[in-house]
Image (cartoon, rainbow, N blue to C red; front, side, top):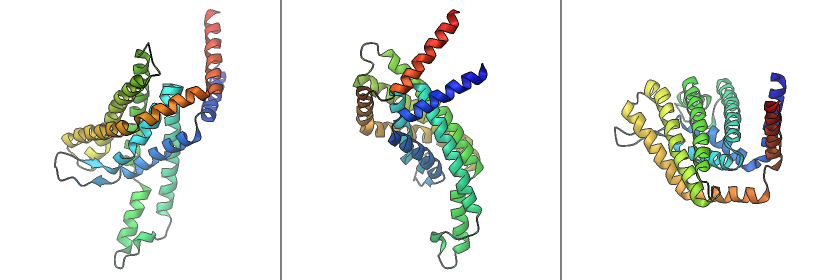
Length: 258
């Protein structure tokens, strides 16, 4: 029974990967990888109570794609895509770490008198540290699950026109605000507070500021996201995945009636 269930889930996931347009998958995975790498760099801000890292400039891509996938394929599909992105990110973090410990010199390290120092700094940056990888992974996984569920739940509340622009805007804005706040806050508490010396006030203000930047990006890109989901529905994108899910639900209903 368990073996069959795992097999069915794998078949459903395989159908999902065939159904989600490749460009969306690439953008999502790259955004997850890039924001974790850029999270290593803090932004200099002349205000003591505010602290930010450079991951903020790309993290909105991840939430944008999650909102699009959740709208069309559902929260389970978006969460499975999130887990895939995290696994790929961890794999490449491992490869970067291996590259950082291989003897050699980075091109940017050739500055007379500072080669060793700069090369060590570049190795540390690209090789990463366990607490940054752990913190970013944990924060994004929790935030992604909450974002996807919230997005779906808000969409369900629109009974008359769930596929309309107002419904898409509200579900994208609210879920992104909550998800991004949680993502920033968890990462700040796990990593920045304990290892970078951020105060709790800085952690909270970072989370709020990151959320506001995300919402600003949503204001610019919400319509392209809406247009993408509308086009997908018109073209029947994901027909194989939806048919497989329907068959699975039918089988579960029949088994429940026996």
